[in-house]
Each structure stands twice: as C-alpha cells, then as structure tokens.
Length: 313
Ligand SMILES: Nc1ncnc2c1ncn2[C@@H]1O[C@H](COP(=O)(O)OP(=O)(O)OP(=O)(O)O)[C@@H](O)[C@H]1O
Image (cartoon, rainbow, N blue to C red; front, side):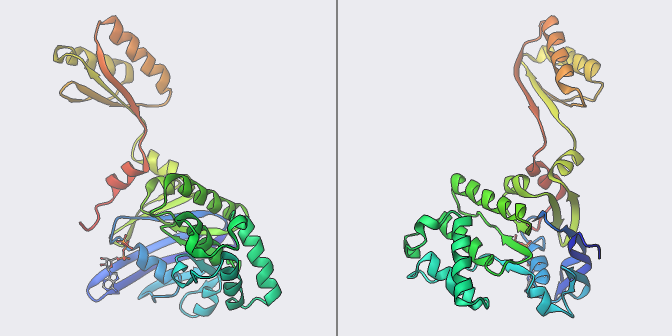
C-alpha cells in the first residue's frame, strides 16, 4: 500500500444471511483528505463504516487502515481512529472541561496531560468561554463541537464522522464545517457520511457514491457533477407559435439537440457558454420572440445522486 493511502478496501463483501449488504466494494482514502461516503438508505454505508472500524468482519476482501489489516491487526486498526457520536456517554452534570479531562484519562493520558489536552481542544473548538459550564446548559451546536473534541483526545490519524450536522441550524452547521476543515488543515484524514449532499459538496475532496452495496461513482464533487453533463440552458417562450422558430435559433447557435416541452426549451451548453447564450438572446430578439423565463442550470450533487442511484424504496 502506498504511503499516501490511509484506507484501502479491496473487493470487500458482507452478507447478512441471504442479503448482500456490501458487494465487491473497493475504495481508497488518501491521507489528509475529507472522503465522503454517500448513498441512499440501505446502500451499505453503515456496514462499510462498521467494517472499517472493526465492528464487523468482512466475508471477503481486504481492508487496510493506516497500514494495518482489519482482520489480523484489529487492535492496531482501532488505535488509528476516532469516532463521533459519543455524546451519550458524556456526563450532563459535569462541565465541558471536566468531561474532556475524564475522556483524556480514559484514553491513558496522565492527569497533567489530560488537563493540557482539554484546554487545547476547548480553544480549537471555540468552547473556552463555556468550558466551565455544565453541559445541561449547552446548545445542540456546542454539544456537537464537544463531541468532535472528545473524539480527538487521542489525536487519531483518522476521524469517522457519521452525519456530523444532522439537526443543526444553518449557522451552527457552517461552524461545524469550519471546525472539520481546520482538522484536516492540521493533518487529519476524515471519512464523512452525510444525508446532506450540500455538506459533501462543501467539505469532501473525494466522494464515493454507493448503491446496493456497490460503488456507482467516485471522484471529486466537480468531476461527479461534470460526469452527468455540463450546464443547461432552459428558456420559455411566451407563445406556442414561437416554439418552432426559437428551437431553430437554439439549434443553429448551439449545435445541440433541443428538448421541447410545451413552451419550454432545454438545451445542453458547451464551453464558452456565456458568449453563445448572449448570441441566442440577440437572435431571439431580432426574430421578435418574447422569452418569459430564462435560466442556466449547473448540475448539483443532488442531480448526480438522483441520476446514479436507485435506493431500496
Ligand atoms: N444486521 C443486519 N442484518 C440483516 N440485514 C442487515 C443488517 N445490517 C444491515 N442490513 C441490511 O444491509 C443493507 C445495507 O444496510 P446499511 O445499514 O449498511 O445501509 P446504509 O447505507 O447505512 O443505510 P441508512 O442510510 O439507511 O443508514 C440494508 O439492506 C440493510 O437492511
């Protein structure tokens, strides 16, 4: 395995009875990146994360985490990562600082080291001001940041973030994204699962989209969006009588097939789209065709998701 690779899964399979939850899945996570694992409900994300974190054993294939084999070196693999979602085990009657110190001690740090680490993490996650308040007074966003801080006590090489911002308001979500970006800037590798495609788009360097336990697409968010097509121009003419001549103009200028639905015309745009769109408008005006609606669309990750996955429901 190359030095840059933090996780390498090759031809991994997992069944539950007759149900194949993960089928011949191969994935690679580079050191220092945010890797987004996406897929519809039942796609196999949880099963994959459980195998990566040694909570489940795969039936076939190989998983190497930071150089260690998930089956024969499970203990070493467990030392490589932090997991979020441990807030359940955090004591509500203690302060953020006290909780961090306790987790530090549980992670094998000395009393002094646990204190120092707690102070560092409180500063990193903007919790210094509330450090000595009991958790019962914390907002959802503060709890989530503390949860992230707790998972980083042992300075893990990899962090698994499962739905890190579910239920947070937009402002708090943006703060969480900032905290995650800072982690990666400081050298961590993050594996992220999320229902929010915008979150993956904002954060992930690389995305693997899975469905029915199989990889259906992988790449940077930009590459995935480009893979399902580039920009489209959509315009609506005000009268049905103008549809035919507008179609001719679009075809002539853009050299692409025009999709017509009632008075709405849709056509893919190539490179130099702004110049060609300007020409389309000039020609439509010259032909005295009135446009009642006009839009340019760039595919979003939602489009990628909907186009490439089916899901179980
Ligand atoms: N312990 C189990 N026993 C039987 N089937 C299981 C078990 N765990 C998962 N499955 C099945 O394996 C498939 C993949 O499940 P998994 O939980 O990995 O999907 P997921 O992508 O995490 O879905 P979600 O987004 O809903 O959490 C599903 O069809 C699920 O019903």
